[in-house]
Image (cartoon, rainbow, N blue to C red; front, side, top):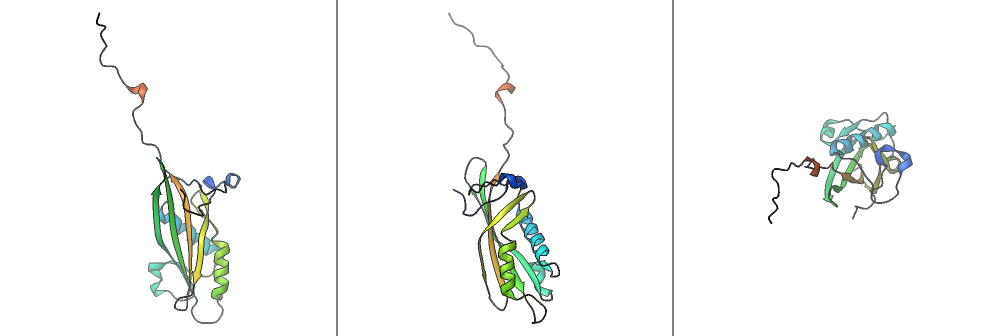
Length: 171
């Protein structure tokens, strides 16, 4: 069973779009790659606005976007396959009124921009996107889900076995 919405491109190849919930990621997708991919995408759509890690945003001057990975999970679905999901939260702090985008415009831009995000060598589709307005800021959430495939462990092969004795015929 795959976590809903886990559509992505295999190894970044747009010709390999499967359109099925069983997308295949890589062996080495980590939370840091998820964070970096979303931060790169935010910097592309808001070029003049600082995009910060949520922990570093305490002393920032508005307007800015702060990013955090809210949760992550991995569930084993086969011998070497894992369903992985990360929920990412983006806070847009508008600051004082003036020449800044309105939070509704930012929310619409985030829906469009964070639908597809590149993580390393693959492109993944966001699922379960939502936003809210707590405490005069915009909080946008998106979940990325994909299937991770682990490498096989090196083991002994039948050709590598040595015969140490012989079977004796008893007659």
